[in-house]
Length: 636
Image (cartoon, rainbow, N blue to C red; front, side, top):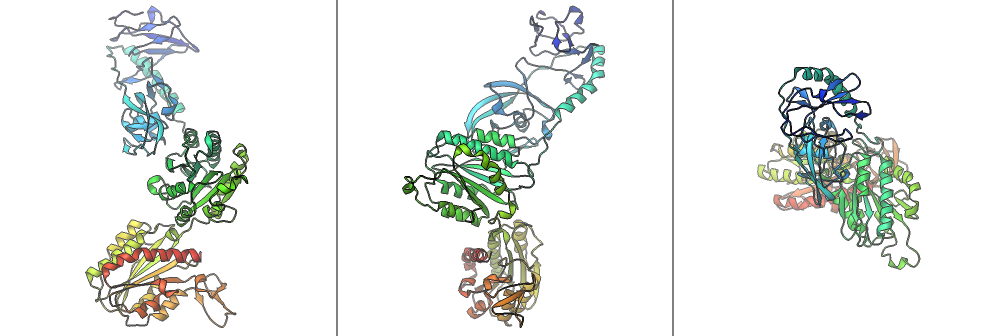
């Protein structure tokens, strides 16, 4: 034992595999030091001390931490626990513990949930970087365990983006662990010895600590998948745990990653509860750990409420939904649901979500009377074709179903509900800029069209919007491919300058049909004409030509068939099957009803709108959008 007040630097020689007690000759230089004890086994018990350690047979000296930019020294507390960058708060058993974070965590993709207080699923060192308790070079921090809470708030700090999480069972908080560095008086020989071995030591440290798990995932399954699990009293705790095991195996088989599938999860009970978002996990092990930590809720099997909740909240960009990625919902039900699924499933389909339903353990003959809707599976799934419904006889035999169900979820060609009116249409706006409109009313027309555009998912792989303004002349304001974001389209619409002039609507229809639309499948192209007066030219013939664009009638027509000049295939003469432009006419003030009906597609009544005042246009937004989606659904 070194006495209190003695100024000694302890120099310890290490042979491979063991530590030896230092001899009196190994006191190599002096520092300001508090008492240091050495156990009978030779194990060091430092208390805020600094050591030079000697490794190997030749006595090479290596400093383990660079102090004040000169010495690479180590100042360890006896309770300090070294961590990896990926160590989670849940991996620490103590209520309060001092830990050390390595120096290479800043460049890694670490899961951090919360701000100031972090969910226990978070990386401790990632949270330390986010909170500022540790820096890019690592550091020693104190971790305090806390109860779970909800919600955990996302934020960006110190180069780290933390994520939101609805709730978690336990939390932790961090603080910087302050230890005063010891004052070194001097020892040139010791400094030189440390310098000679420092490069090799740093190289060895980097080689071991910079080994990273590269982000990726299954690139053949780039889906956004939300799993709705049964957490009711009906399933019970035992089968609930079996369900968790099944979902965990699915997660492993899916191989989540930044360039692969993303998975979120909602529990169905009396009220739905989001457990984690699509953006929360990009590593399979983290996702499986989160599934393992789920707790059984109990209550009714309100699967309809859970589907509605997931459809409305889980696929938004705020929740981690990715633009252009197929949306998939896997619903697991033990037995049968307590509520109605039809309305929620309809919303999911209209939102482009492919709903799969896996039912486990069909109701027995004695239980059938308790099932409120025997066709709940048919009504819930994306399409009742056998592909989206899946039956498992028992929770005890789920393993063999993991691979085939995963293959279905990742089958891009089978996802029939991915294309909807909201993400698949081309919408052209034909805007009356004649003198009778006036600039203030012209702005109201633009507001009306902007409100319609807001309803659609505009992107380079989604819905597209273009605009033409007309008087006697026509002007292409912007084409379908010019703006690939909703903000870009809305900004372009509101910047359109008012032309003023006469009204030649027929010529404008022809111009828009030729300059706005690319030829695509049936029911994808829509033209909305907004006008306040009578046209000086004929509107019926140009409108009919636009509606039949891509189709011609001639002596080559056999019976009631016509010919698609784009694909060189025959199709029926039913307008619903034609690949042309579906037209909506919107009249204001003095617009003649006969002109409006001549321009509109059939049935005329559902494609013609009129309002006396320009301020009344706002009330027509939802009816027009509903009409577009109705036309799309019956033609695709």
